[in-house]
Length: 330
Ligand SMILES: [Zn+2]
Ligand SMILES: [Zn+2]
Image 1: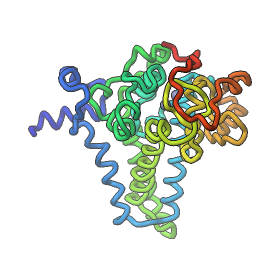
Image 2: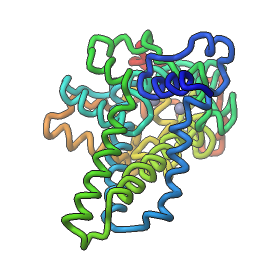
Image 3: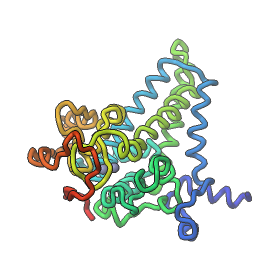
Image 4: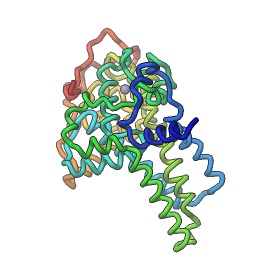
């Protein structure tokens, strides 16, 4: 590998507008391993926990950043940018888009564009991450490493293109995560110098707060694409294999009620009944009290009660019509 190749790879890590069209055309399903080196290294870096050790401060930083980023992905990347399930002003929309990029799952426009494709073609060949079509591992992780899924489909997010700050953030989506990592390291070093009783340091906060926390966020959110189409119960007739799974709903802050969501995607909530806990929705309700978000879209009672699948029939019932979401913006 020559210097030029290395330089080009580093550019693609930081500027997502840089990609090789001929490579996509020649091998759309192929994986450009050089480009995905950072993703692999993020996993390997978790092993450094054996070197940096444990402290309660590091654990709580990891838990806090897990919660903040899972909420932001589910409430904003998913329910707001992909489905427009509620409203937010331009300032808060950008703030949460920025926090969302810190989950290292690309920018809000890339994320929303691919997610809209998933709903439009759920579990059909055009679905970018269908476990029914392509198996568990493709739907869990390989789909977004594939050459063809690297570019942002701007034509699918025309409604957001009028905000140049979002387009810019989507292009340079790797900058906020790098800043987060540097900030965590710096805070850890300051704590080591000025609060030695906390028994932490920069390397420890970097490993726990950035690497371990991000990998946990990764695989919980990826499970919605993979496991939530495989394991769980189906309440509504939809043309896909989406399922409701309480364990995923717990860790993914409500996103595990995935059959509910495919049935009525434009709602701000995915738990349709009081016992279906939906942490992201509860936080959105609190944020609405502070006027940070508004007009949380609800599920009409008649929609909630219709097209139910009897408990004894958990097949996918593909012949049944699917309720067409009205905010797919296709
Ligand atoms: Zn789905
Ligand atoms: Zn969705």
